[in-house]
Amino acid sequence: MQTSTEHITILGVGNILLTDEGIGVRVIEQLANRYDFDPNVELVDGGVLGIRLMGVISQSDILIVVDAVHNNDEPGSLYRLADEQVPRRMLAKQSMHQMDLPEVLALCAAVDKVPQHIVVIGVEPLDTATLSVDLSPVVAARMDALITMVLDELDRMGAGYCLKNTTYPQN
Figure 1 (cartoon, helix red, strand yellow):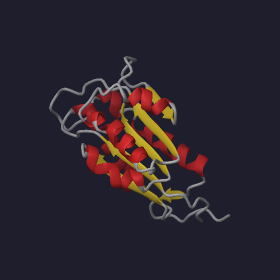
Figure 2: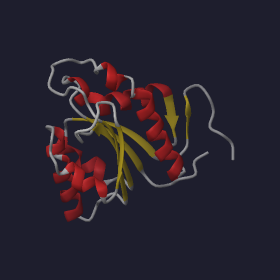
Figure 3: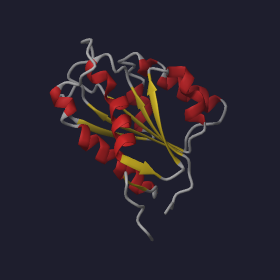
Figure 4: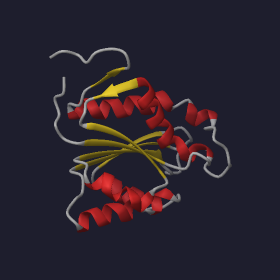
């Protein structure tokens, strides 16, 4: 049963060809494989689309971004950044796709189409330079924790989801 009517976008960003840089996209793939979501929840593989994500972002009431977050912490460290914290951290522009995300948010603001709530769920990468489609073991080991963090956000927002081939809880 759907309890939230706001349009929620879960956006995975990153380059899947550069080891841990692709964690956001990999989380979206796993969410799509494991869960069904209320109709107002949209999963988006944003890859490295940058400015082309303006339409997706501007139509969202709530935006959950899943990404590798460079914070000079131990690889595998998990992060949740919300609202005011997001622009400061994302302005660091430490990867190809992050160069565009602050600009996209600024353009959305210019046309008064910024999501009401923005959350970044991320993990400290070990390697974002090696050409490989495989995640490093330390980041791959955090996949389920990242998925849980995304689902926790949906719980906070009152959005429904269930494992594939099951039914939504009845309220």
